Length: 405
Image (cartoon, rainbow, N blue to C red; front, top):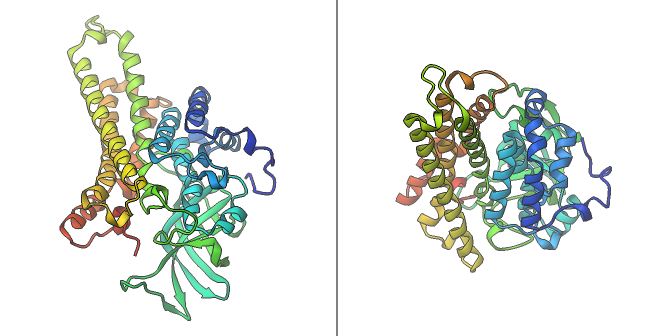
């Protein structure tokens, strides 16, 4: 594991630090990542040198603002990079999407804490923000205990995130709305017990293992609430910033599958009839329909993210956004997950038995997207929460619509 202490200090000056340069660097990695996709999957986590390839391409710094040495990418720019990375390898795209949260978390930490914890913008976080832990208040911070699953990226992380409800003298803390108080704690990997549970259908290379923390002291300044930005304002200090860039991963996987099948269909001949696939109506229709669906959902995702960004950048507070603006990005993100799976499933069926043999990339893309769609961002609770918010009802997953308390 790369540690903060051993990383070369001159690393930062060699890393791309603009949206264009990071995207170019990631696209340049495509051939190597494609070649190593089977290895990544069999390894069940990103190999250490692959992690460093992503770090060197600037993937993990995308969420940091210029004040902390980052490239200050917009959510649209972040999504484009993640789409390109997932196009090369889905697990790498997923780990890049999780690992770049370091810079997004920095909005909620004090400037002094950011500079201490993230001496360069290439420091990686991994883990879960869901409040599965118990954090007892003590002088100067908290004693944290809990068990978390699906800790994507923690096998190569420099900091591990762990959501928790807080307690004071054994009594659960509650916020002004009467809900349990939720904070995210950042701890060193050396203070975390990692449990190798990740034997998954898809996203096998993401290393999304379980982890435990047992009575570890976490300083107050290493914890945060999504409702209280401390180091900056603006679009990346809004509580939904973590979710806006997530659709890049399913979009990249679907684009990869579309390009693969198009290439196969250009030269494939039906052995029974001698007809070229390029002249077959069923093949033409399936590819055309899948391309139509992809373009529709991709433009919808990018359009909604761009629209929200413009309003926040113009000075609108998140709470001032219309209900439509608040639900649009999260609903279209869900559609990207489910739509990408639908596209790949149809393409998989089109290739028939060609798809089923490992290491067929179609087999891997289908399994990756099936697994990806088990994430909360692709679940019905997102739709319920959006509908409830539009009606003034009670969202079951309020964070999806930017409610943090």
